[in-house]
Image (cartoon, rainbow, N blue to C red):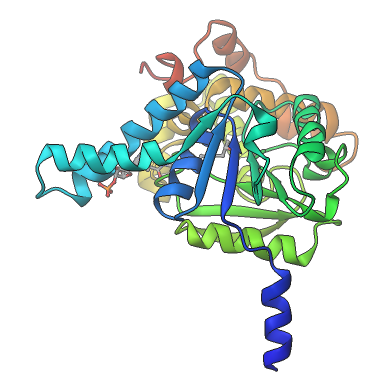
Length: 308
Ligand code: 3HC
């Protein structure tokens, strides 16, 4: 009935102001798409001004690419103005309390460390409006764990975007056993307004994409470690034989070898004993660890399996 309809409409949170924590690749990508495609009032927050400037640079570069295509027949000044308008519309601040004062939704994309995320959310829980929704962009931690320090577990979910955020169409929306249906629906709605396609996930290691991609990348590294094939041949094989846009080594360089190593380690330490992940899948790889030790972290560091 129309009554039931309006009840749903009233209960579902009307998200207008979104605060993104983390000026790195993921956070600034999410902030960019929220502002550009979603039309939200976006605040980007990080601990230093340098990180925020870095976030704005990432947005400018990406939007310049988009403007060059979308406004191909327009003069350069017009393209630049278009980019500047969107970048300038994203408010930046290092004051976390102030950033969430009037927020409807917080999306966290800071370092993948459960303790640090819990600390941030505990603080924000006391500063943000009581009805604001909290979401984490974690790719491999448990959303239930991250939400533990807050008093709003029903208004807490996962909102996982993919790299490069402006280009990849997917958002994994994660529902824990405590996430309310209204919260879940609101997150789905935000993903759609961003022009993305949401999928529903339960709070399991790696959700859908990383549950499949991480073991795949680690197995590719083991394959090369065994001397069965070269890095280049594995990538060529998966691109031409399976139609993947990137081979597993190109993808590892994009994701970051430190990130990949960190996910594997985290799962070894906390998801094997629970039976969620089998030990074989996340076994430590010498090749991966050596590259990380040498600072060869992938695209972001000037090279990984491939030179930058
Ligand atoms: N901003 C805006 N647009 C971008 C962009 C960015 N940062 N990066 C790429 N694009 C656009 C390009 O402009 C181009 O657009 P067009 O098709 O309209 O011209 C399009 O993307 C394709 O880019 P390129 O032509 O430069 O290069 P490719 O065709 O090789 O595509 C790619 C690059 C989109 C990265 C593609 O190789 C790809 O899809 N790779 C797989 C990426 C992937 O699997 N990501 C998920 C990683 S896992 C993850 O993120 C989870 C994390 O939690 C670990």
